[in-house]
Image 1 (cartoon, rainbow, N blue to C red):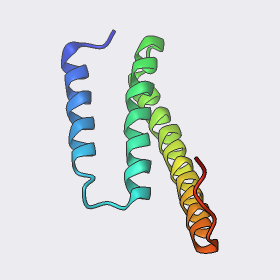
Image 2: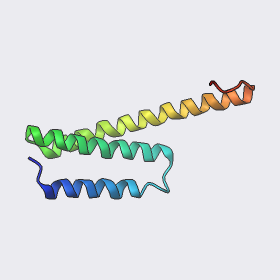
Image 3: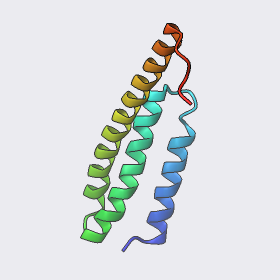
Length: 93
């Protein structure tokens, strides 16, 4: 079971990581946010199965990949919107 000390350290680490994202690009911020969320989720699941560290590591990798893929989707969406503006189409309602 996760001790209160470990949980507090994880929450503080995630907060500091996200707080330092103000100067980052959207891609970096989304990838890092995904990694942090994945690490937290993986750590919780890992602690239930008996290995906190591996759960956090695997969760961070999966979360970073998910954050990066989400960023790519948002960039494609923005590019499609810009193409629509350039072609003079009205925005969907």
